[in-house]
Image (cartoon, rainbow, N blue to C red; front, side, top):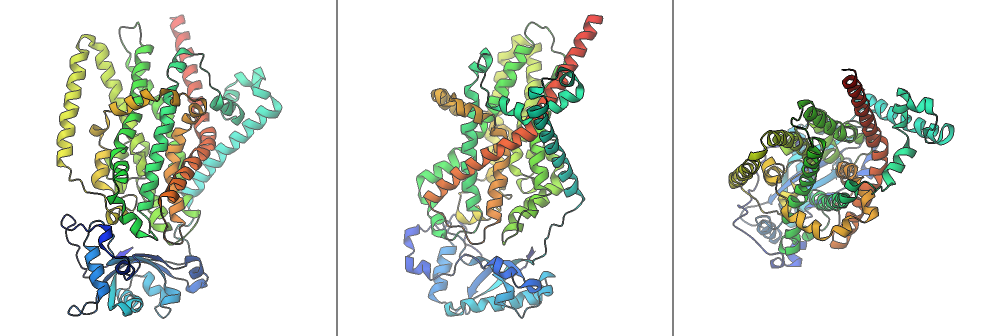
Length: 563
């Protein structure tokens, strides 16, 4: 995208002017040009080799400074108000082949400034009746040719994914027809038989849908699956609002009125911290519980136990995460095209191609949001970091049992003081339509840097109280099964939302009812797609990991007996 250093009318500091939505008359609002507009993309592509579609930001200003029109006066007043979009900065998608066919296609693709000015003059004729003209500030043009040709990495990832799918199909057919439930003892006990049986979709489906509460621990902790499910639903709903704020809106007055509605302010600002902290609370609580149970009756915790736990957590989180982000970095851009496709899907593709490595090291949360591949994975990175940190703390507490209260109190005080000073340095900004749209789903530095900061995600008292009260709802059997699908649903839901936003052909129409239906749709699709993801790419590798650890334990026991 080319950004031009055009003279632009600066917005008055947003703290100074606040105009309620009802202070602008409907007739005044209707006199302004559409802040978002998209020409028919598919019709534009019918122009064949001459097809050229450009997405522009178009800075408006009056033709004469001395004699401004009534429309410009409204635009100026509204654009200087924090509760409104920048109506003096239009975000339009235009079919150059149709609107301004005399401008050479190659010159625009090569970002020739002279011809971009010609395009500005051509498009300004659309607003002559309002005594307004404009200049292009940013421009991005595309043709019928794909920007993302299939390359070597696409083929490698495709081969890996197809190989896994082939293993699942082979194991499932063998399980169903040749040896039901792998009853052939010779085959089932061999290494290859153990490996292949891990991929059987029949066996994994039974594991996924079986609720076995005979184990006292499983029965006591059954409500945690429900908590995971309800939390992920809350995350998907919050991200539904985020994605809709970051795409062109057909009825911008809807978004401009949200800040005046208290319920929307509460939902947007008050819920996200508690939701994510609950995940960390459950994760570390279970880790601590298992640590003390595994080492009960022992004086020393061997260091290899710590390494084993860290390795186990890494192998637990990586396969499914790798599947989703490798797909985003290879095949996802080939699914479709559209006026918003490059800015939404292409941006994610380029970030994953450049910064994929930090997801595999689980350190993505230390990088700025606008540099992260799949920025929602900050939570997964932090979970891994918390696992390592918690094990170190637990090991220290185990060696010094009498000092536990002092150590834990000291850590808590340090956390409170550290969080206070980190929060003090951050300049929080009120959420407004313009800044929400300009997030582009990756550039959300100020408030989101606090969300992903390690220090601000430790306490989760409020969530614990709430879920303690609604314990029965968390133990409902269907929710127990859905809780096993939450990891896949969490990983996949942003990509579903991005795909839907990327294929938009017109600005998105929004109201409360449509948002509710959209939330339900995203929740449903996320958990439906999580089923094959879990069965094909999570459970088989989890089973392989468990079989490997069990084999290593047997070898270790045999060595101890021989010694």
